[in-house]
Length: 295
Image (cartoon, rainbow, N blue to C red; front, side, top):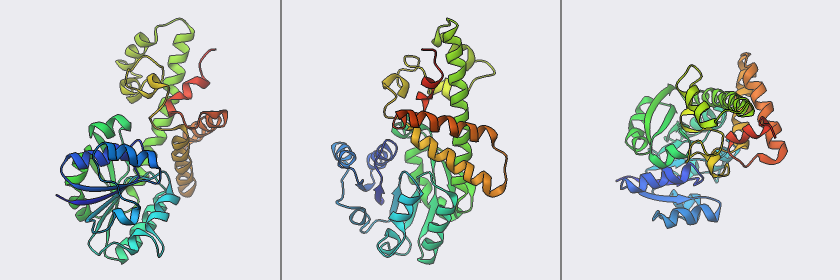
């Protein structure tokens, strides 16, 4: 049994913390939002009064936060967790943030004798609940081996992408592709439906053909095709449009830094920005199909 502080209990972090609790670990959870804390308490997970309280005597800290500013705010500075944690503590940050922020936190952690891994995930809320996430890990191999038994309780695939920050770079590449694929999938389905095709039949044809992709397989953007997809639940409870927009922004920042050409990534960011400005930022990113449907 490992003593774990889990900070960030949203749509992804909450189920991840529950899975660690179910595996028999001593989890102390915390989130700024009372509703998130209440959900975890209802699932039987002990909830702390603050992030600092959750981290008292923790052997491992896991965090799942929205953006770079939140991660830096949690860990850095005189009041940050890194100033409170004992040397030898393992920190696993599964947020999706800028690689530069992950490197900054990793450097401060190393100076204090704390092992830090950036370990963002893919697999959606369904994967978080089922414990089948994919972890993309940046950091020292030795720290990853310490973390592996815990990551295996939350995910089915664990990849060591490289040194600190590499996990974040892998994640933004993946999410840039996902954002582009969801727009393309939405365009194709909307076109077929506008021409009178049954969306379920069309989706199955494309799924089994050269256009097959993860969205068609598990995350169809049209309501009623996949029962458990956010689209069939009013586009609620999934990966928000504003979070996809944030990740696509990170991808563009990375591309600018290394002078990489990402024209489709840039266009995808603009499309999701328009969708967000239209008032849909809190809806799952698959709701982008609404921009493309015939009304």
